Structure formats: structure tokens, C-alpha cells
Image (spheres, one colour):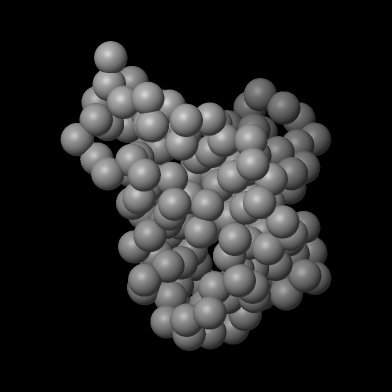
Length: 167
């Protein structure tokens, strides 16, 4: 499941970053005039940039983007950024998402974040509906466009493993 969730994480991160770079006309979109991020997401950026300043002089925007956690990218779809980002164009980062409301998307992303964290920390996931989780991950990849959903679905080992059942 982790390999599928990695595509979701990196795909979402890259789609959002590219969208915001284009919207604000700069790689460091988080520093753009007129952009007022929620203090929690702003604090995440400051923590990453402070750490990079200590360990990597001359860091770039790409370094910041790579170090921001999955939760940061999902938080950008949260209620606190609805007027600042969603209605001002963030929804174009997910062109396959057909609903106008961002809250169902945010909930789906947050459920995948929870699953990803459980998998990454070797916590049990057997109590979850893993087929539905896999479908949700593929659906989110479909929202991102570019055929990533089909490529991951074609190569995912999850359906075969789930079909074998527990040992």
C-alpha cells in the first residue's frame, strides 16, 4: 500500500506546488504578497526553511517543497485556506475533481494521510477496508490528471495481495 500512497503524496505535492508557482509567479509562492497562509502551515514552512538554512546553505524552493510533510499539502485544502487558496485557483491543481466544494476532497486526502502514517510507522491496518483505501488513492491520482492513476493501477500489487487474503 505504501508504494501507491507515495505516488499520491508526491503527485499531490507537485501538482499543488506547480499550481501555486504559476498563480503567484514565483517558485517561493509562500512568500508572495497578498498570500496569507494559516499560522500552522506558515509555521511548517518556517521550520523547514530554518532547518535548511542550518544544513544546506543556498537551499532552493525545491528543497523546501521536498521537506514539507504530506500533512502540509493536505492542510492547504482545509477550511482555513478555503478563501485564500481554494476559491482563488487551487482547485485547478486537481483538474479531475468535479465537485465545486473542497471539503469532500479534504476529507478523502486526510483519510489517505492517516493511512499513509499508519503504514509508514508499521502500525496495523488490517481493520481498514483496504480495497476502498486503494480505490481512494487511485481516485485522488485521477484528480491530478496526467494518466498517473492508470499507470499506478496497472502496476499496483495491492489488489493481488488483497485477493490472496490473510495468511
